[in-house]
Length: 309
Image (cartoon, rainbow, N blue to C red; front, side, top):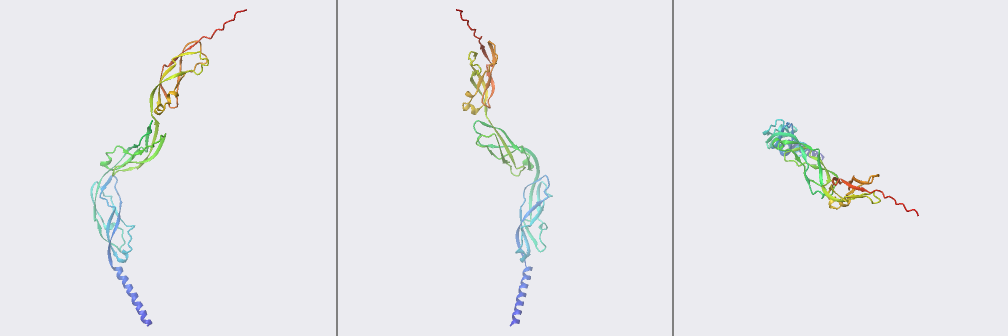
C-alpha cells in the first residue's frame, strides 16, 4: 500500500509539472495603455495639434507572465527631432517600446498620427496690471507697477506676433485706504501661448485726491499785544491745493490761516509787510491776494507835564 501512495504522489507531481510547462508556453494577447514620452523637439517649432499622450499596444506573451505584466514604467519613446512646420505623419514603431524578449508587440492603435506644427516665436512684451473694484472716496491710485514689468512669450508665430502687451488677471483693490499694497497676480494667458514668468507681483500706491480751493481767511497778528497797530485788509484771499476729503469734512476754513508777524523793531509810520499762509499737513499754497499788508504804526504818546503849583 505504501508503494502505491508513493507512485500516486509522483504521478500528481508530474502532472502539475507538465501543467506548468504547458501553461508557461501558452501565448496570450492583452491590450495595454502605454504613455508617449517625447524628446528632441527642435527649437523654433511649435506643435499645434495631433500629439497623443497615450497609445494602445497589443502585447503577446506567456500566459503566466502576462498575468503579472506591469506597464507602470512602460513608455513609447517618440523622437520629434525631424518635426517641421506643416503636416507631419509619424508612424509608431514597435521597436521604440522597451519590452523584454519574451514579449512581442502585435499591434499599436493608432498605428500612426498626424502632427500639425508651425513656426514658434519668442518675444518679450510689457505686463499691464488690470485693476478691479472701487477706489475709496477721496483717493486715487497714484502708481501701479508689476514686478517684473515684462514677460517672455512663446508660442505659434501667428498668435504671438499680434501680442503687444500681456495683461494680468483682474486684481481686486482693497476697500480700505492704504499707502502701499503688494500682491501676487497671474497673467491672463491666451490659448497656445506660454509665458515666463506666469505671475508677477503687483505694487499699488494710493494717494489723496487734491483740488484747488479758494478761501477767504482772517489776518492774525500774534505779536501786537497792545493792539494799537492798524492794518488793512483784515481778510485775505488764498488759493490752496488741498485733499478733497479735507474740504468735504470742513477742515480747511478753520485750518488755513493768514499770519503776519511784526518785526521786533518797527518804526512809526506806514509799512508794506509780507505775511504767510499756514495750514494743515498736506495743504499747499498756490496764490494769495494781496501779497502784502499795509501796517500803520502810530507815534508814541508824548507825556503831558503837570503845571507847577
